[in-house]
Amino acid sequence: MHLDHHETFPERHTYSAAAPVRADGRRRALRIGLGGPVGTGKTATVAALCRALRDELSLAVVTNDIYTREDAEFLLREAVLPAERISAVETGACPHTAIRDDISANLEAVEDLEDTVGPLDLILVESGGDNLTATFSKGLVDFQIFVIDVAGGDDIPRKGGPGVTTADLLVINKTDLAPYVGVDLAGMARDAKAQRGELPVAFTALKTENGVRPVSDWVRARLADWTAGPA
Ligand SMILES: Nc1nc2c(ncn2[C@@H]2O[C@H](COP(=O)(O)OP(=O)(O)OP(=O)(O)O)[C@@H](O)[C@H]2O)c(=O)[nH]1
Image 1 (cartoon, rainbow, N blue to C red):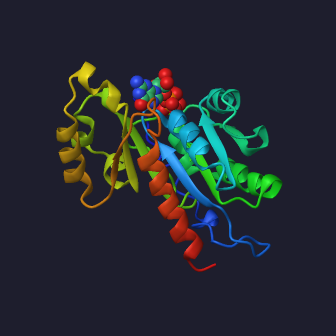
Image 2 (tube, protein in one colour):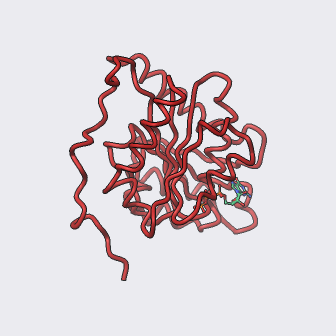
Image 3 (cartoon, protein in one colour):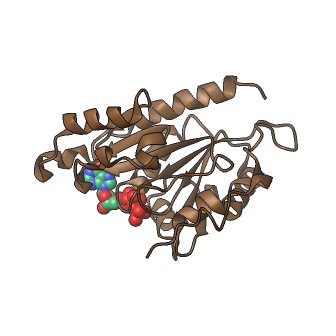
């Protein structure tokens, strides 16, 4: 049986929702988390976001893997950012613990990046692949993106779960595969709307040119709000 840790590891309030200003008086980087089930395209989204935004922003990435540094190694191999801007956290068995319950390793990685390569505009925190309930602590990230894909079937939005219903942006990736897996994208959009109300949904096909555009535009808008906000 899978034990959920909510009862045993309550969220640590010592890392309260990360004040916008660092100890040195500078505005800290905006932090955006990417979560979602295994293999839906989280790393591909992070890589595409880095390519789309790296010339206009100072950015860095924290990856979370269960026992390896595979996602970080992929990003390094693809050279989406200089190596010093990519940091890997090994989470052990349950990826959601490191982004929701005991966020200290991730916070340390985020703060180390700001100290060593800062100032940064944006830090992307990629969770390890988990299940539909995995969400980020508000003490770790300012916004969260939940990535699902059409290959997982068109009933995922209807099933809901906190990732699908509450993420600040729901990404439904691999739309290029829809015809091959018999998925009705319009139905997925309707189900997502029913679960999420006004919260946005982005359909992506990351293998196509500019496929990440709906996500990168959303990130730019969040960053514009963040930069305009009180420091
Ligand atoms: N056809 C298609 N394949 C995609 C797309 N996006 C990602 N993939 C492929 O899907 C596979 C998984 O992508 P990843 O980005 O590694 O997925 P992930 O969510 O980071 O996976 P984990 O970290 O293992 O949970 C890879 O083979 C990608 O090349 C897409 O839009 N279309």
